[in-house]
View (cartoon, rainbow over the protein chains, first blue to last red):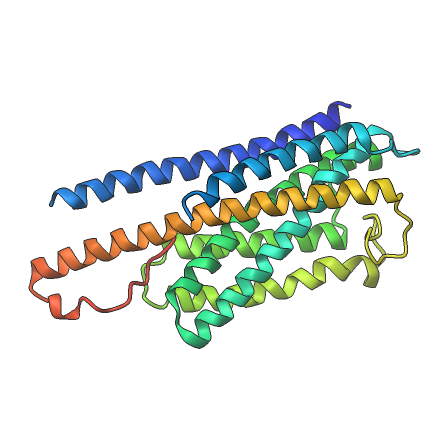
Length: 39
Length: 240
């Protein structure tokens, strides 16, 4: 069972890391967008 | 469109939860491998989803080469990136399954090696998009994507053409998969495909937003140097 859970946890960890990186990118771009709006 | 995304997200989350329940509880336990065989319900759908995304990347890349449509280029980048995520899952879950079943984490078997090569090709595609400033980058990346896509049938059919340690394909491979297992497999594939679609959608919006910001910065700097007349030049940089 430990291999099964390891595989499922690894899958969702990889998806989680990727989704987290997308959120970070979105925050950075939104900040840049706001700065552009101020100029 | 703004309402559609949350609705699809809720449906996909429910589908993923149901697929997980089916994989862990409903699917019958395999006789020789036991519970570790259930890794198959994540490993195989992830591989199919990655192949599908690389196929869309190929179509978008060819469209870009023919029509020079920047939206096709953006779609190609998005599919390659999300495809690499799914391919990474295949390369991680495969060895976790292999260790208890084969007794080894990895072997230089044709199926495993071609999958690793596929992953490396698309990682190099993303590295090219990330670090090259040239206006020719989208064209070079599109050509690389075509070479990458050639590896997909090689990965899939390698177990038919070569003697390999990897199990035979579950669809069209001559093996007999329990219908209940096939049902759970297809439910999981549907769930992961919906999830991939939503991730691609979000990532595509991000890509367009980033390109708009880069274009605005380029216009600003061109205006600052007094060459605003050249501002209509296409941007080479895209993915970051």
